[in-house]
Length: 161
Image (tube, rainbow, N blue to C red):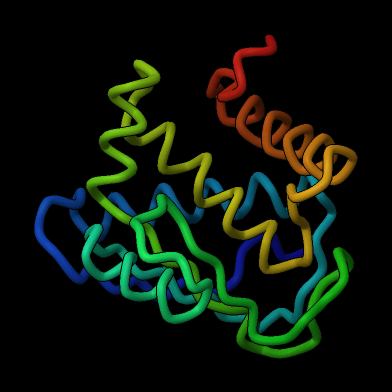
């Protein structure tokens, strides 16, 4: 079973770790959640990751979610799909905000890299139709995230060890 799509990275602002480090973190995160959630996608599947700042993610959030504020991560699936996976070669795009992630990591006393990996996992699950709008769905999503993070030696981000 393929455990990670081809990952394309775009760094749109200064301050992010080097591209090699981001690629390593993304590969680990996506492989972990693919295994834990048993996600299926074509062998030649592709994923695009954008590492930007608060200004750019605010513009995306305003345009696509009508929310004029920064957020930590945004996911843009290519096709509306069920948890068993989209059939398209391109899975989607995920955008991350440097300032928001640094702020949240500091506030929660977490390592930046650990919080980023969590958000990579979280954003990837969104591409497969997972959401957290209702409590039951949030529980499912959080459980998968905690299992994937645990497999990488990262503590429960929700504090429920």
